[in-house]
Every structure is written in C-alpha cells, then in structure tokens.
Image (cartoon, rainbow, N blue to C red; front, side, top):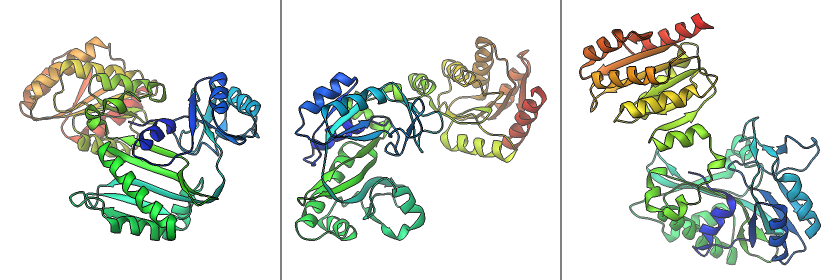
Length: 399
C-alpha cells in the first residue's frame, strides 16, 4: 500500500525526523489557509499523487509550457492560483504512464534555502535477506539518470535484521554522502530514525529524495515516499486508514475485497492462477507464445466458487481482454471442486470470450471430465505449454 507525501511526513515526524512545515489541502481555499500558517515568503505547492517525477510532469489539460506538479510560489495569491490550476487536472509523469493521475490533493509547504541535495532510501533486499540503505550524493529529480549513467555514485549498505541498525551503519551512510562534523552526526541520527520507522511500520520502501542540507547547516527531509507490506497492515490500523482508494485501480480495489491479488497489465489474455510463482510462470509462457497477459491474478490456495466468480468478473471488466487462461494446481483444493467452481462462474458471468483451463493435481481427471461435460465452450489443456498455445490460438480465431 502506498500513501501520499504529506502522510509519510506525518509518520516520520513521530520519529523525531526533521521536515519542513506543511499543510495538506483539497481546495484552493484550504491551500491558502495552510500557506497563511507558514512563515513565507516562499511557499511550495505540491501535487499529491502516488507517483514520482511530479516536478517534471505535465498536466494534460494545460498548455505544454505550463509548470509541473511541484511549484514555487512567492505570495499567497500565487499559492491560490497554482492550487486552482492544479486541482482536478491530470498530471502525467514518467511513472504514471500516458494516462496520468488526477490531482485531488495538494501539499503546501514552507520554502527551504537548499545548499545541497542528497538521496537516501531503504528497501528490502530479497537477494541478501536484509534491509538495504541506498544513498547518493546526487539527490534530486534526476536520480534515475544517476542510477543509469553513473552507478558508481550510488552506495548500498545492508543491515542484518538479526543485528539491527548499529552505529557503524550510520557512519557508513554519512561517509557515502561525504558529510563531516555536525552534518555527519545529524546524518547518523537520521539514518537510525529512518531504520526504526522502516522496521516498526513494516515498510516495503521508504525513499527520501531529496534529503537536503540547508544554508544554515541542517538536514531536512524535503520529499518522501513510503509503501507498506499489505500483509502487515492489520498491525497498523492508523496506516491502513491513510489508504486513498482514488489513487488505485478500481479493479484492484474490488479484488482486495475477495482477497485476490490482482494487477492490471497491458495485454489481451486474462490470467487466473493460484499461487504467485505459478502466475508469473503463466504470464511468461503467454509472452513466449506471442501474446501478452492482461493481468496478474492470484486467487490463492482456497479457490472457492465465490472467488473464481469474482475473479472472472474482474478480468472481464477489462475491455482489452480477448481470452482467459485459467491455470490451477489442485493441492489443498481438489481439481473436481475447482472445476465445478469454474463452470458455475462461467455461467454466472455469461462468458463471452474463449476460455482455456489447465488443471493439475488431486482428482485432475474428474475435474477435466466436469469441464468437458459442462456444455460450455471450455477448452481443456494438458500442461502449461499446451494451455498457452491453445489460448493464443483461440484468441487469433476470434480476432
């Protein structure tokens, strides 16, 4: 789960982390009220969407030379005019894709005199099984270019979760950022605070970009992004309450109600699979056969009729779907039970696109028999390769 910048800063402030003063707003009037509480005379008006690259982004409805999603304002009137121009319009960034995201929230913050920008993030490094701190002296809007063109300017420091954050980790971060004296001490303290927040809040990613050194020698978190392990949200009701469903795909929201893991993709073959690894393999083999998956959808270990029906409905809401491939391994759930669920679900949703089903596991022959005798145009497959070839061929027939 992702949250907005202003929400992330509220959480970080609870850990004693220094952030500029700021106020969220959903209208130009609220933006002005927030700005009036700040010392000024420089303000920053920031679009709040779940995507990076806001500063270089462009609004669909505005002229090409209009400012992006992060704007400086030198007066209250400029705060108001910028807010009115941004709210309700669609911001397109390198991370949103061409469709962009509608701006419904703003964050008005105090201006900061910046001497230097840095980059600092924490994430789970699954290769090492540790938390990784990724730091660079080249913070700011072009960090992606730094990673691509000059990767030697990026340092990764891993932390053993059994040992936790130690003083030498903080010193390593300060050294990588080439900080000394009081700035180095501030950096070591900040690194420890961020690690504590990352662990206690069950974060998947915590990014500070930029972390800035001010003209008066202070380190401030100027912008931050946070995402959380959705499986741990039951431990953090305060974080879960920050969820902004307007930033999420409606199909993904619907899927979450049935405990389905669904992510929309850009292809034309809908996928319904039990198990994340099997789902990834299914998507790969569809591409190997010359087509593209329309989604990732994991129905989990308990593929009940209700879940299967909900999955079919969610897949078919995507107008790009021209065929569906169901790939189920019957372990805990028997294949005949799953087959009955597929048949019932196909009838309930009045299936109108080709459907190929590959079953394997307990009672697989009974399951195939149920599918074959259903009276529905369901194509059975013997293995995953056979299933991929058949669904691609069926879609080509109807094209």
